[in-house]
Length: 321
Image 1 (cartoon, helix red, strand yellow):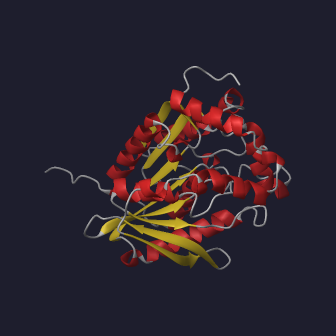
Image 2 (image 1 turned 90 degrees about the horizontal axis):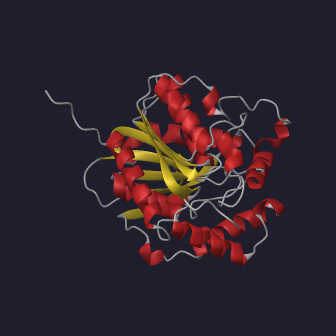
């Protein structure tokens, strides 16, 4: 498959390796098969000895929208009271779990000096929208109300990648509406506009890890029961919501990601609404790059820059004077 020569060469090699594996496309299988395939890629092929080391990792539960859901708490080696971050994993609201995003959570905890609470929200199609949002909101509300049990300071942030970035953005809007403060939101190649059509969906439709048929398949599992209506609801498409008075944001995208323009549009709209926003589009990278640092120095550098930006929201420098 011919790909843009501007693609990071290390990621081009990774994509060629995946091509050679000749596995059945995710959108042609069942959700269970998709989850197993993603877990093989994200967990089984990972060298556990190379994971960032943290002080403690504890499995627990937190309240969800319809009962307890699993969660995992990462405590970094930093001392003293710390900020807390609720992390919502990606995977199109269909795949992904606490294990597939273990590296990402360890990285955020380590580079941001924060306690990270990763939430295993309910997945579609068994639990279509709004189940994931309800779980994300209930879990984040619980953490907000029990910060002394987590990081120990009043500083709370939300973070997520892809579908998790969508959920983090929606939770940030809900927290604003409820008058609950957030220190920041980290949105990594988020899906922000399920109702819209953006050029990058076509430009990067095939050949860059996440493809358009898979996006359509994820959408069918998550919101297919809505029959194509209501996709402009802000709990599905946060770009369509009210954006003023939101927590400061870090929004990052990748050049060769179908979701690139949705993230860019959200960052631009946040800035226009007066929300302090740092936006980065990383050249040469693809959807999923936060888990690809072991394959690509460019991806690792992007992860480190992203965490540096988010860390500045969680650990603000006191104003002089």
